[in-house]
Length: 303
Ligand code: NCD
Image (cartoon, rainbow, N blue to C red; front, top):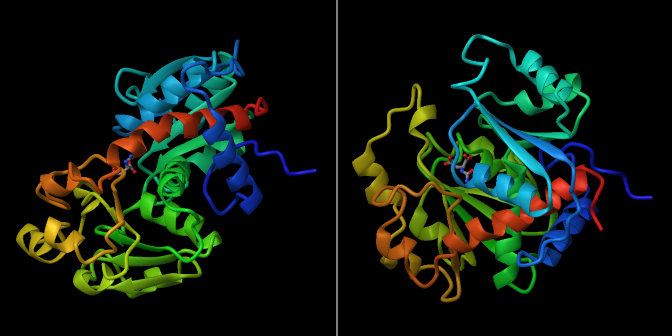
């Protein structure tokens, strides 16, 4: 029997089979007539950090499947009065939450809560650590466009160091034989990043990295996490901004991804963000079906 997934904390904990099952279930989700798999279930979205697409798509995913979703944010809850993460988790579980989707600025926060609270925890981003639902929806988007993952060249450009999206994506794609190239200035892409997973390499020259790329994944420069980093915006734009000219270095059928929020004029230009190779809106749309699959799975209702 396959191991039952109780909490989704990161990509590494998943077997390759569990990843494939989640993606297959996401593909089967009928958004027009969603199956009422979670009727009567109560979901709490516990968000200690800003979010637009992740929060909205988890909420829509839950309600589409028939669950009730309640949002708790750090401001306007007892968190503001000083309640600890674990006490908040216990409170949420005691009022009857069947699962908690959590975003937190500290790496490891979701795993910590999962040790103390007896309901499934879904990590919706913890500090610089993991963002598993984003990696799953990115894999879904890539496989919508490419026949198979094996052998693809995925170039991840930008602030890899601070990016939970980059970490989760590299760990997931590596399982399927993808070549992942981390590209950015040394402050954002230290050499040691190549040890993250098999198939990961580091390249500081974007014009080299982009050659033969099947997927270009731009990342947001995470200003809120830039303590002790001396970023020159002009240098970054000159060397690492994705422009139409640079996109031409990639394969002609290359797709462009970005987890959002996109800072136009920084990591990429508007021509690229809105251009024919951009799948950024598709990623956001795929977020709903992916999160439906995740919620149905952790709540033991997947069919
Ligand atoms: C990302 C995040 O919060 O990790 N956004 C997202 O969830 N789609 C990326 C970011 O904030 O840059």
